[in-house]
Image (cartoon, rainbow, N blue to C red):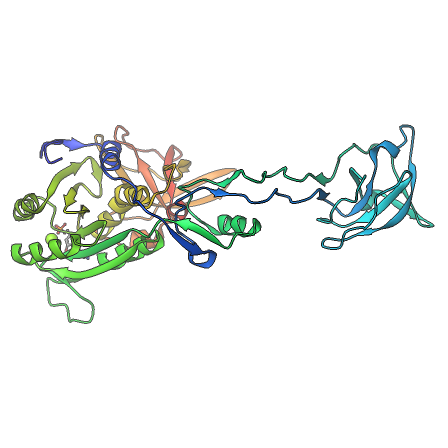
Amino acid sequence: MADKTGDRELLGVDDARALILSQVAPLAGAERRELHDALGRVLAEDVISPIDVPAHDNSAMDGYALRAADLRGDGATRLRIAGSAFAGRPFAGAVGAGECVRIMTGAMLPAAADTVAVQESVKVEDGFAVIPPGQKAGQNTRRRGEDLRAGGVALAAGKLLRPAEIGLVASLGLGEVAVRRPVRVAIFSTGDEVQAIGTAAKSGEIYDSNRYTLWGMLTRLGCEVRDLGIVRDDPAALEKALREASAGADAVITSGGVSVGEADFIRTLMAQLGDVAFWKIAMKPGRPMAFGRIGPAFLFGLPGNPVATMVAFYQFVRPALLKIAGVAPLAPPPAFAARCGEALRKGKGRTEFLRGILSFGDGGWQVRSTGAQGSGILRSMCDANCFIVLESERGDVAAGDSVTVQPFEGLV
Ligand code: AMP
Ligand code: MG
């Protein structure tokens, strides 16, 4: 792996992501979980429906269930109202010739009935319903098994279980699903200047924010996070931390220590402990990054600047962790075009991820930047609701130009 890209060569964003995805593989194994404990997990096996959905023919509207064959072609039809059918309380008999049954949404269609006339269109006179002309046979009904047949695949393995999926499984009468275990991720920060909160930062020192953003992003992804704290820029301390982190983790994520000038002793150490490549990615922010394996764990060495850490996480680590978690098929984060409300300077030859504020108005999506874009300005991520992605070969952007945006909401 270490030889795939030379140190001086710049790697494109898409190439870097593809290289990472080609290396990582889904976790094996499955565990059964009750539905409340399955939210955010990934299905390990297909969910097979034990029942037809819907389980019986039923009405899609409040109205009158009738036999289409009774309807007159030349005008209104008078049908005797033989009874009522409610959801959970079906009409006991069959609908006879010249009859109809008052029916509520979701109620079982009585035997022999095949069509529902909506309540608002029907006049009731002396126990008879007057059905206006223009009804279509079969209308306003839901047929048994039309959504899903018993024995069919309701949800495929690889599906991330969101509230809709949890509800769907429940609708089949199933209380448990087979899911993958959460991905185990160990994190630590590096840097002599990085201080833990709770200690007084001296001049030249900064508080550690990366472990908190990483913890937050990983938790939202459903990972099990192990936090190993802050590690000094010292080979022995780093070696100890890397050994400890990689034992029992699927992935290790570090921040800091991978930029030029800092990388040398880390590179030597990581080469001794595992198989790790140091990349320079053609992007801003987030140019330096390490990726490889240490023991059983994948290592992601992210740059230390707080925005760079988050951008690199979203662009590279997140898709890799989703693949490891077993999510399939893997979809790229949602991206679409928006009109840029301001001029932006952009150098060619690298992809830039600006922090943007996206809104809908004046007939389309509009975006503007959050202002100063320094990679240390974490506030820019707080103000933003999207990345503005300026592709590698793109030059300056004029106000009114179309740009690509990636909304954050789609990323969590
Ligand atoms: P590095 O990648 O180690 O060269 O760090 C780049 C910049 O990010 C430096 O200004 C660091 O002080 C800052 N930095 C590194 N680690 C952290 C962290 N855990 N939290 C906040 N800032 C950091
Ligand atoms: Mg550092």
